[in-house]
Amino acid sequence: MIKNPLCMLFAATLLAGQLYGTAQAVPLARVAAVVNGDMITERELNRAVAPQLAKDGLDSSNPGDAGEIERIRKQVLENMINERILLQAAQKLGISISDEQVDAAFQGAIHDSQLTEEEFRKQIAAQGLSEDEFKERLRNGLVSQSLVRRMVLNKVVVTRNEIDAYYREHSGTMPSGRVRIALLIYPSDANAEKWAQSIGNDKNKFMEVAREITVGPNKEGGGDMGFMDVADLAPALRMAVSGLEEGQVSPLVSTQVNMAQICLLERAEGDGEDASIAEPDEATRARIEEILAQPRLQARLEDYLRELRSKALVDIRE
Image (tube, rainbow, N blue to C red):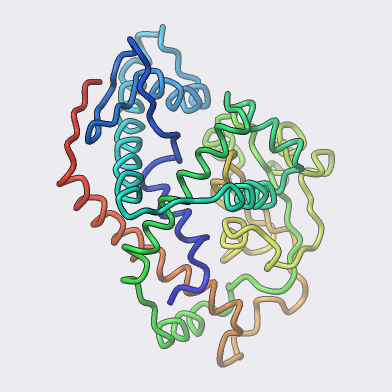
């Protein structure tokens, strides 16, 4: 049984799209697709595509950008169709999410983002979303997670022997104890991929960029967070620490509203380096279970989506 399903399920449901809101019939609006009678309008598609176009610096009035814009539109529409199919399947099974669960997920998103509540709300607004719209996306994500938990998660098994074998092989790099990290949270409209390429694996460049553009804590100090317990980090950041040596920079990490990177500045002496311990503790065991189960969960989810899609009536008009 997976010990931290919500962390994994959120990552897995990203395969179905970025938690788009439910379709609403808009009179006289052009229709991009119809999924089992449920319309996805051009207006919805345009709103979903806009943040990616802005992040990539693409302009619909520029003929040279037309090909890439078309590719993005098709991919986003496919994601929206897949998520709509998941939501419809959940509705048939009577799966629903309470307002209290949505509020808890909203607070959890703020915590995991490492932003203050005010900064988090600003980043939502920068994406052109109201708080209610963002919460509706969270609700849809939670519905999808519940469906996946019921239909997919119980088919994913990681054995104790597999966990122990992974620990023996990777015990020297498993994140544990206390680490000092610098955190770079990119503005929602920044081209994070381009910035990450310019940083490479250069700690000094990382902190220079953080002082320039981060929307996270301690901008003046290059995002230096000081020493933190690894267990207190958001799951995505905690896993990004795994395998990093002091001074190294992680790949891009996706959070609820922003892309981020971390630089491991220092590891408390002895943390994560004792490979002589025969067995992992429960917290480490849970993290290994997440690592091993993730690709299996993704494969199962893809199979489940294909099964649902094969039975769905999808009319793409885009």
